[in-house]
Length: 75
Image 1: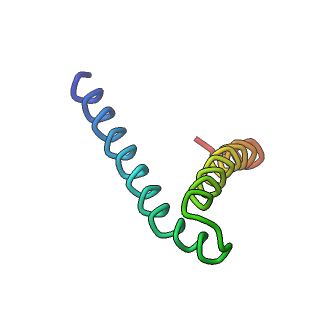
Image 2: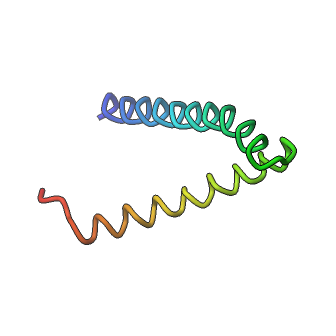
Image 3: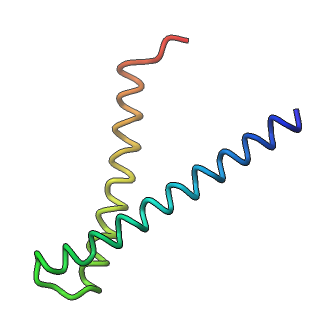
């Protein structure tokens, strides 16, 4: 049981670190692109990008929740 909990915790931490790294990498590339395309400062592009990340976080959660209700996985 302890091994299972250890592996579960280790895999969760690994996934969290991977997700944070992906989001930070995405922000590094999208902030300058947004600032250039929209002709705004880097700060305004950062705020816009964070807003989009938060919006899509809730959007993806809702989409997956509804999708799982409509098309349940047969266990």
